[in-house]
Length: 338
Ligand code: SAM
Ligand code: SF4
Image (cartoon, rainbow, N blue to C red; front, side, top):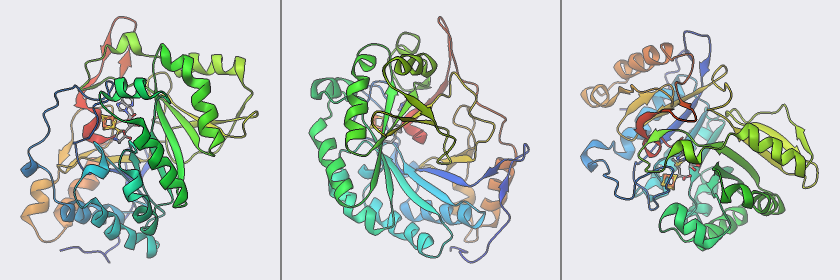
C-alpha cells in the first residue's frame, strides 16, 4: 500500500546536505558489455532477488514523500527491463502533481528509438545517452557487440520526440583522446551537450584502470589549446562542471570523481534493483530495504531506515587511482548505474 499523500521532512545528512535526487537502478542487466563497466561473462542477479516494478515504484513514493524532487532511472540498461514504461507512467503522475521536478534516464541508446515517444509522453524532457566514439568498429570493441547505428537511430528518435539529449563519454587514454574533437563537433552540431566522465575503479571490468585512466584535468588543458573554453557557473544538480565552447556554442561537462572533490554538495542517493540503498557510489555498504518493504503494508519502517541511512551519508568517496595502485569498489558500475 502506498501512502502517497503523507509528506515528511526532507532527507538530511550529518553534514547538512539534503538528498533530493534519487538514482534508481531498475535492472543490473544490459544488452551491451562495455569494457570499463562489465566483464564479458557477467553473472546477473537471479530474477527473484530483483524488486518488482511495483515495489520499485512504492519505494520511489517513500523518497518522493521525503522531498526527493528528481529521479533518474538507470541500470544496467534501464530500457531492457520488461515493462519499464509502466514505472515511468506511475512516476509521471508525480510530475503532473508537482511533487517531482524531473524524471529522466541514462541509457546506452540501443532501444531508445522504440521508447523515445513514450518517454516524452511520461514527462521525460531530457535523456543522457552514453556514446564514447563515432566509429562503428571501435563502438563494437568498447561495447563488445553493440551496433552504433542503433544509437544513432535512438538519438534521432529522441530529438524527434522533443527530448533534450546529452551525450556521456568515459574518458580513456589513447584513441578516445584522438577522437574527442570529432565527438565534440558531432554533439554540438546536433545541439547536444557532451559530458566527459573520469573512469572509476568499480568492479566488474577486466580492463586495467591505471593504464586506461585519463585525468580530465589533463584533458581539459589539451582542449584549451584547441578550443576556447568559457567556464560556466551553472549546474544541473549533478556533479559535472560545465564550460561553453566559444567556437560551437555547445557545452562540455567534466565529471571528475577521481581528480577533484565533487562530494561537498552531493545531493544524490542511489537505490539498486534489489532494494539496496547507497548514499555514496564510492563506498561499499548498502542497506537493504527489501525485507522491511515486503514485511509491511505500510511504509513507516522503510522510511525510518531511509532517514537513518541518509543521515549517516559519508563525507565523500574513497576511490583512488594511482600510477601503480587502484583503490576501487567491488560492486560493478552496472549495479547502481553511475
Ligand atoms: N546502461 C546505461 C548507459 O550506459 O548509459 C546506464 C548505466 S551505465 C552504468 C551509466 C553510466 O556509467 C554510463 O554513462 C557509462 O558510460 C558510465 N560508466 C560505466 N562504467 C564506468 C566506469 N568504470 N567509470 C566511469 N563511468 C562508467
Ligand atoms: Fe551496459 Fe551501460 Fe554498463 Fe555499457 S555502461 S555495459 S551500456 S550498463
